[in-house]
Amino acid sequence: MPRKYIIACGGTGGHLAPGIALAQKLTGGGDHCRLVISQKQVDTRLTRKYTNLQFVSVPGVGFSLNPIRLILFIYSLVKSVSYSFNWIRKWKPDVVVAFGGFISVGVVLAAALMRIPIVLHEANRKPGRTILMMRKLASRIYLPDGIRLRGVSPSKIRYYGYPVREEVARLNTEGARLEMGLDPAGKLLVVMGGSQGASAFNKWVVDNFDKLAEQGVNVYCITGPTQGTDGVIDGISKTGKKVKCVFKSFSDRIPELLSAADLVITRAGAGSISEIIRCRTPSILIPYPFAVDNHQLANALFFERQGGGVLVHQEKMDRLLAEVRELISNNWLLSRFRYNLNKMDRFDSAEYISTDLRNLCTNDFTEEFLCEGKLA
Image (cartoon, rainbow, N blue to C red; front, side, top):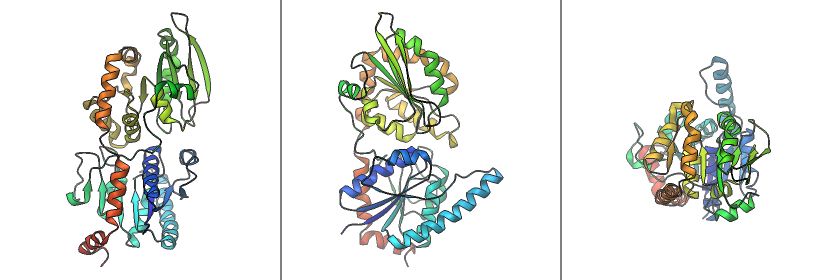
């Protein structure tokens, strides 16, 4: 019998992408899903291509200690809980799955009021405030390897990784470049600042493209929706070969880009790292220095220790050009990175999680709730 799942995953690409991946797996198995997203532009852009999935946009703003923003957060939260309560009551889902972020709070609280089973997913190696706040309401929590949550029984925790969308996979390098309108030969550096872009990355590309061009390196830079506009800068190498730097404000062709790249510079969000692993792309990770609890640094340190790429701190970006030049010309090292990335891609996280969710929707799940007094 098909089950119904609500997946609260909006607000950032790092929350939304795994929600989509899980919905793809669940709906592919005959179940029904509704994905709760925010009203932000990043959610609208990313969901546009998934016409086979159902999305529900709910109001919400992020938590802040600023008095004015705190009032807005509380008002928005009350509104979100009320809105979520009404439509969840009508749809009657079997389980609510939340990937963290501000958009999850109202949905989870509404589900708790209606005693609907709650499942949480934390992607980062430092759990976010939302997951920490809601952990006592959950009957299952998916965490990165080795991470613990105080006050949560180990029996509730599973280490099933980060779900990656079905279309994100390693493609033939030459074919991927041709599809993107890029030179199939030569070296390609891809620069991505996450779903919102990174002005520091964009400035670095502009300042250093001439030097990269001399070495024959083409560049493809995703600037972010609010950080820049589309455009192309032409260059020429020391040997007289034409190269170019492409700027795009947004791209939904991440598999092609990562497969086309010899090297990628990116932030250290869990989503970016998971897609890099799936596409086997050597990388330089530059954690966002103002991320909550510096969780991107924790992600990057763990990734570097596994041999998937190199960590560079943003305050040391003056060394980035030398690092790029050395790595992108070292075919042996790039090959070693790809070998390590292949080892890191151990299983299909979306498959593991979807199977576990279906198991949770059995009598065993009901009994677990009854034992805890949640459905009594």
